[in-house]
Image 1: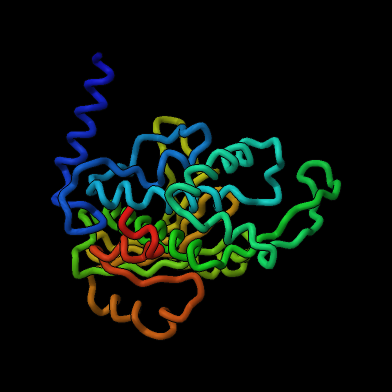
Image 2: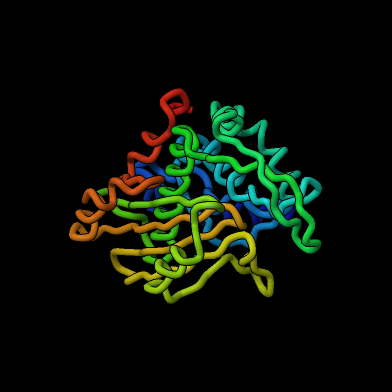
Length: 275
């Protein structure tokens, strides 16, 4: 009874502490965990980065959370018997329901090819399947997740929701697309390192980011989820910086999106936009 009451009060405090949903102009009605609990092994997520959001943004982006988690866990080092592989299998029903069409894009014959890779720890070759996850539905859901991530990190480090006249730019990269050279180039200007922590426990092997923030208007970060998914994000309320997001050199980069608060759900595939 006492523990249940403490959880309930915590939820109420989180919701009451937000002037509005951190993703849109709506009222805060529920609690959003960013990253979601499902991103972590056995759902063991340290208690931090919890925000008040509206019900539409929370429930409407459930499919995007599942797609991002599924992609993050895809890596040749994750064997069939690993917890990552088991988690991926369990996610398929959620993706079919809340992100229809994504699994079909991943299983398309022209997007898959067999390869051989060294089995970690043994040096033996193992057969792996390389997947090109570049379909429009996958792009849409990862763009939604990246936009939520950017707005959550702005809320975390600036201390308020991104203003409605602010904007974010995000770009995702999968395990075959973020080379060490690209990563080194991006973290040169991002001196601070962070993850979720609770006491001595941290989940840096599952979620970590490098960032820079002026604590007033702008945050930039490179975020890693497991071994399979990276995001480069910028979120700002400074109009001079926002203008850069709409320049061709940003807008035309692959796997990227520019969006403002209130337009998050418009990024979803049309068939799922009102879920």
